[in-house]
Figure 1 (cartoon, helix red, strand yellow):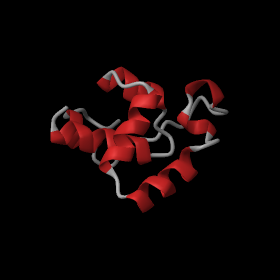
Figure 2: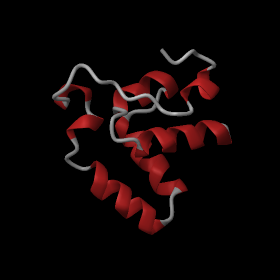
Figure 3: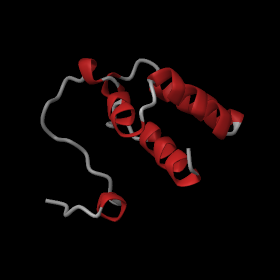
Length: 86
């Protein structure tokens, strides 16, 4: 993966409302591969903080999400994908 792709995966992994399914769809990485990527690219303290934050979080797994409406949009989404924010 290129550096900007790794940076985007890390950013998506830190976002609370971005499920691992979205990362898999965009980058072809499974949840386990994202965990390995995070472990290799983050400092140990950041890695521990991220793992603690993600473990048990229902919003990171599409099937465990309690909400269907209210999708979060990144403030930089337009510059990333050149899409209009509606």
